[in-house]
Amino acid sequence: MDTTEAITVVMIVGMTCGIPLLGLTLRFCVKPVMEAYIRLREVQNQAPQVQSLMDRVAYLERKLELRELMDLSIPTSVQPLSAEAPAALVKKEQGLS
Image (cartoon, rainbow, N blue to C red; front, side, top):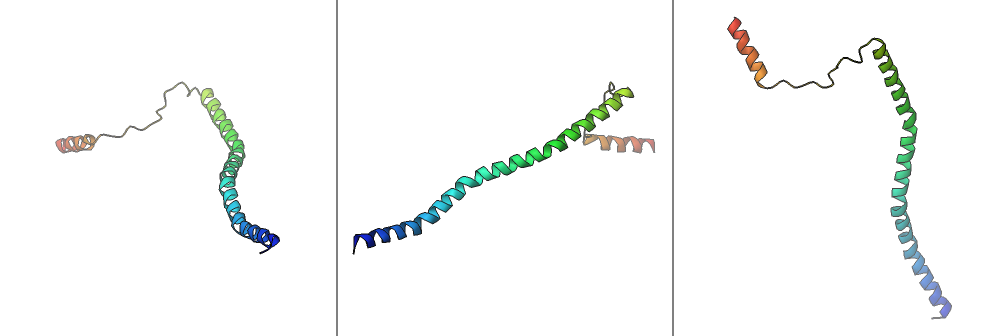
């Protein structure tokens, strides 16, 4: 085998194995970068929506202040009834009947 033939064989085998390995390596390296870039673009597209929601909340707060409802305590959560409450109501209703 000639030196030129040996170099050609090594180059062909190297390219046959090296190009797919290089492709897989690039895929695994570039994929997280592209996903982060896509998420960044999605967040930037939502910025006008967030700003419009903040404007709407500010407008509603001004309306409440004008009607003097802002100072009143408005419950923000519903407290669940205990399991004994319905039984107590049934006993009261039975006692009234």
